[in-house]
Image (cartoon, rainbow, N blue to C red; front, side, top):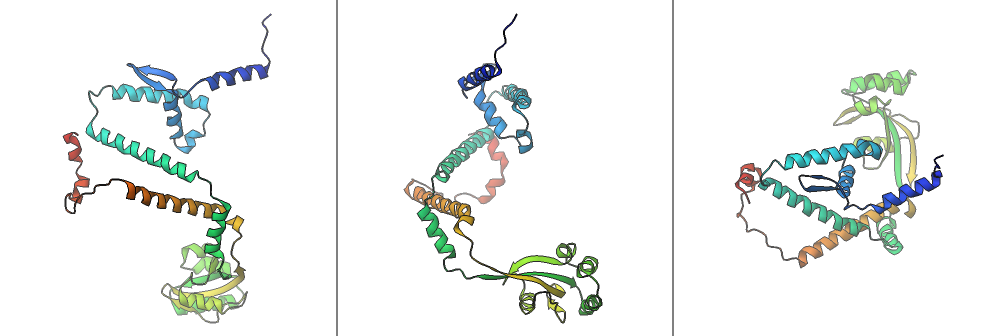
Length: 280
């Protein structure tokens, strides 16, 4: 009788096998060129998101086949074209710069930095009055007055908006504009909204550069400054971005950078792909 290992022992063995492998392990060779596990891992990480969601056992052979086919094709070239060399150098520079930024972004942001950024952004912030309004937009004042007559006769605002409003966004949504603060709408519209009480409609059409509006104020609220915890992630990102920009300025100042003199290169050369055929 063949003895079988307990499931836990089997999984432990598989885990040990997996952990013993390294990114530098060679998975395949093509004409002497090695394809490593690390190259396969990177290839998977660069796949479109929908493919990354596939299980590894589904992707493994496909990725390996792809790398082998790429190497077979690459081996048909006697030498690396200049444009490929330039592209590889650009790619290397970009990847290295990205790693440097990732290291900077990984630096922790202190509570003191967060509090200082919060105070600078919100300490003196006044409460903001916000409005939730609906409107029906038409081209002429006569059309707007006709709309008001229909509404005064008891027709539903949302249904009329869907039928006649020339604003495609809010019209399809029954005229609703959602929440907005002072200054977000054009002046005549904003002024009219501010003068309304909740549930009221403008007594006359309001003209703007977009046409004539029939406006109803649906609700108001006072928006206080957000709590620190609500904006912690945004503030941390801003702080890190500021540190990166500061560090980049420092690095450029410390680096030995030689730039071309004005007029040394014609900007139109950027479109001359034939230059890449001339070699290094």
